[in-house]
Amino acid sequence: AQSVDQPDAHVTLSEGASLELRCSYSYSAAPYLFWYVQYPGQSLQFLLKYITGDTVVKGTKGFEAEFRKSNSSFNLKKSPAHWSDSAKYFCALEGRSNNRIFFGDGTQLVVKP
Amino acid sequence: GGIITQTPKFLIGQEGQKLTLKCQQNFNHDTMYWYRQDSGKGLRLIYYSITENDLQKGDLSEGYDASREKKSSFSLTVTSAQKNEMAVFLCASSPDQNTLYFGAGTRLSVL
Image (cartoon, rainbow over all chains, first blue to last red; front, side):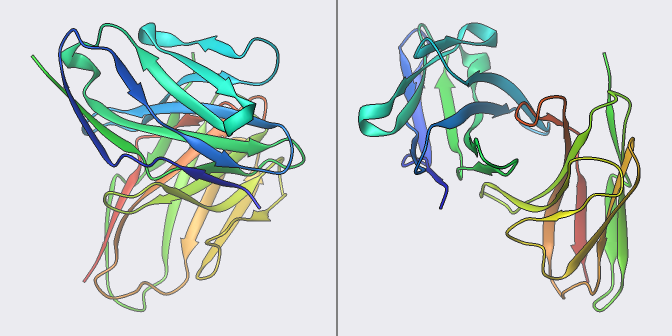
């Protein structure tokens, strides 16, 4: 079975702080992992993905994420955060043996100016 | 660049009605997806298709039908709309069966 858990439904921080959004997954083999962002009133946009190789992947808008097999996590990071980063962030997983992509429930990020 | 166009943007239906949502993409991607997003929740996979005339059920396929008659289009039918149902239906396509490109969504309300 595949599943994705984003334990923090809401995260609030001040502009200039470092942000880290948590994501853990459950999958029996090596997964493909993704982060997507949804700005208010918009649809989802791709941020970054981990397929293989370097465990730290860099994406658009200054974001990066680290794949940690030891604790099945793929946390999203950015420093410093900007008020324009306020959005909902979704972590997603795809099993390598199928084309099914599963999403977490998302983390609503608010960055206060 | 390409675009994914979902029609209609807003759909209001009656309980028990059959409703069809359409999605067109000009990326020339092979794989297309339909997801449902409920307020405050994540996305749940309804159907996906890896090529023309292929259909694969997701976790939420009951109550829905899908059709992929052309590579560029993927339609979703709500077979019998449920009273007070409200959700956003998102269509996506992928060039590599992992990175998804999303449309703007169709917002469904059932009276």
